[in-house]
Length: 226
Ligand code: ADP
Image 1 (tube, rainbow, N blue to C red):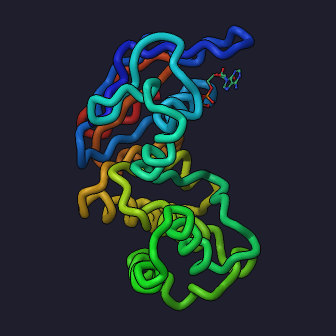
Image 2: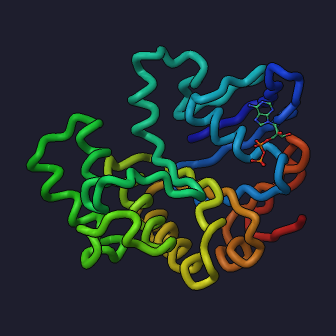
């Protein structure tokens, strides 16, 4: 379980990005986090990844306070959380296959596992035919599918998708959301930040609405109320 307990975050310049945020996300949930630009969505994801620390309150995952995780144990936390960004962040000089394989290499997985798992996960995101293409040879939707494959290859407990469809047209947006749903159906918790009203409403899943660093609404059935 992910638990934000009365979390506030003030950046060094005095900006209060989060102000008393409390919510819990259970294993296997699919939660969308919506809010205008500057509402604090990215800050939430950074706290969860241990990239920033809460000024007050506690962020925990399975009862482990993220603030108390030692630096040497951070890679272990990062492996439990797969992340997908709006701008894909793939390595331009590696093929789709190599981008995904690299995440396994960094995690110290043996070559035999890499050779069997990478094609399997690329099949899951329907990219078998393009696995030897470089990023410049792929469309936006395909790039995001590679990024999803890379995010799930080491079997994280949670996928954080930060505006993953922000650069995509409606058809590709639909495909990416379907893939995230499939991953969630296979048991992975999904946390999606998005501006896309249609996405949130079509999901019909829990929606947390943020405004000026606060949770203003927590709706179990997918109402988008901005
Ligand atoms: P969102 O993802 O919803 O757009 P953010 O979490 O990025 O919101 O930002 C929340 C607030 O914190 C904004 O006012 C933003 O300008 C501010 N902010 C974000 N990162 C920093 C930072 N590193 N230093 C100072 N202020 C920041």
